[in-house]
Length: 328
Image 1 (cartoon, rainbow, N blue to C red):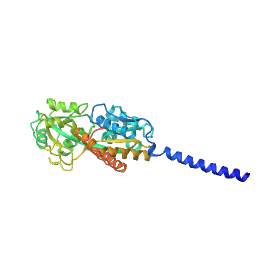
Image 2: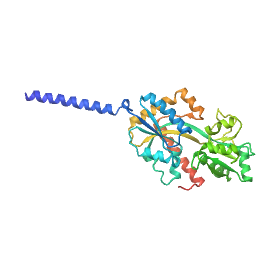
Image 3: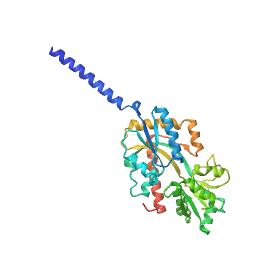
Image 4: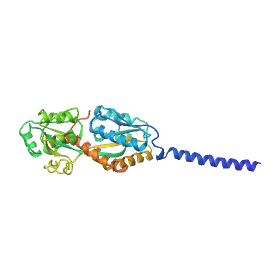
């Protein structure tokens, strides 16, 4: 009887261990994520390009995951408010951040942005990118970047940007101060729209903004495209030369949009989100939709985006240092 009882106990123990192992595996399987609503935090106000991209991504992920992916706009402090809220969120994949280049810039601009990119986040996917562009209004006599810089040497000029610390602002400051060694007074606006409008009305001689904000005005002749910050000319604006073509070789930068999760998020969740976003980025219809707002689809592995983030952080730290912007 004792032998039967012992054998039965061993069988039941084996069944329990097997079932428990299977249960744990099931709980940590990519197939189980997500099983409830996901929040996609955007640290900027609704209506801008970043918000539009977030809504395009959230719609596609909702369809793929069969779970609602809700866009949560949390603007403030140059993106720091919403970003820091995600840094403090549970690392379970149900709170995702969609941010821009600012996440690699703000560490150099703020003493305490409320988060550390290295310590608090994992880069999951590089979604899209767009170069910046210098555009001139009717009040600027120059017809190209070289002439604009010479005009700045002979008289006081100013330019508009979407705000201090944005990549269009830093790009222009680096170009003028460091490369051309000329002073052009920066006028800060609350967003790309007001900066473009300032060039249109002659409030400033020209503006530095992301391409999507200005492309329609260039195509209709209301603004003159002086130079784009991409490595090559844009197919959508083939007559606008690059900054490198305009005499400043090696100058290149982009405003990009990426997806992030809190640092301790399990690898299988990170890889699943990356793979599912990559499928979206590979879709030709989605690519065309991005193109209509002036962005190109990016993509790549988790390893690649985190290598890129390190490179971008180092680059913008150098740019901020050479421009001489004090930390806030």
